[in-house]
View 1 (cartoon, rainbow, N blue to C red):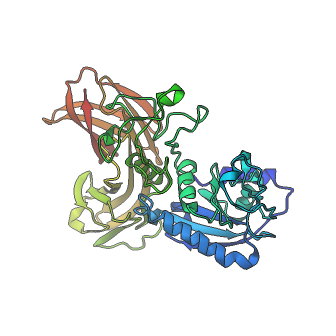
View 2: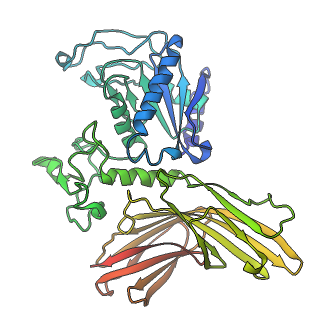
View 3: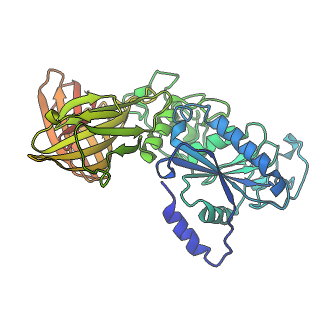
Length: 463
């Protein structure tokens, strides 16, 4: 999700403007920015003499964000950077013009800050906002083009904030909660669980018009952890839209994310970051190989570690849940041998049998053996995303498949008594539908294979 194209457009748009290069600091370093979600915090209303305060405020936000599930469990998947942007004056403007001013006791002020953030936006006092997104995009383009999520932290002690592409929050009470809620929108695409209005009401991870408990997108969490199908309201359009929980952070600040939103956040993390940070040996790094041959994975582990790995040699199970492996000469055949490591995340924060998507990450080594010894070892990494829905299903089962190496996917459906019911192949970026209406009602096992290696499996319920 790195915003490279956005920056190219931005640079073209602002090619005549003066480049503004500021000091960038890393305040949370989990690893290579190319395989992490990079959050970039920009300060507004901080004078040069207040940069130390800005860093403290940013660190306080980081502490708050990564103390909450599921960001706490997946903290290692994020980097956080700050950009020290000097404002001429401290704070944010407050013109005192909002209709609800009587509910607040905030001094009226006009502040010359860098981005022009101000309270009272759109006639709402707490709406701390700026229209100057051209300046925000320009700062990011000039200082950190590989961001995944930008955030503006405003040096103002009063409650306030706003959402959009770049969430904005003050340093007042609940400011971190505002920012985390808004990141739920901008990074994850979660919906509000209070009614957002007819214009913003739409199908999403945590918003639907489906009322059938077996078909609703969060069917896997129904009747667990307070998850149900709850109407947004009792009349009008609100009564036709439903949320999964009555007390989620996407509805109330200070609450945890509900199970459905946690699963959606993890799904996005899996989409953006591979748990395989690096592996050995890599192509071009093998000189005069000899036995035993050593293979290893360096993984980005959740906290606690819920990653699982399986290793196959020539399509036969060889080892599991190890990061390092040795092969001796008798393990290999003359000719080409294939060693594949498959990494998946089996966190209990996702319920994979009913969850629509499967993410799997593989490294494959091709080891060529001749009568004179090891002649070549090559390697390649692959990222696979597989969707199967709806589950349970009565008649039609939809599949979609993506692979970074364009490998073919084989799907095998097996009955619980071991009979192979159906086998079919899918090409990369293919979407297809299988008619299972003739299947007997019950539970089936669906196996997914890539290059003859079992990547994942899940249960299918036929109604």
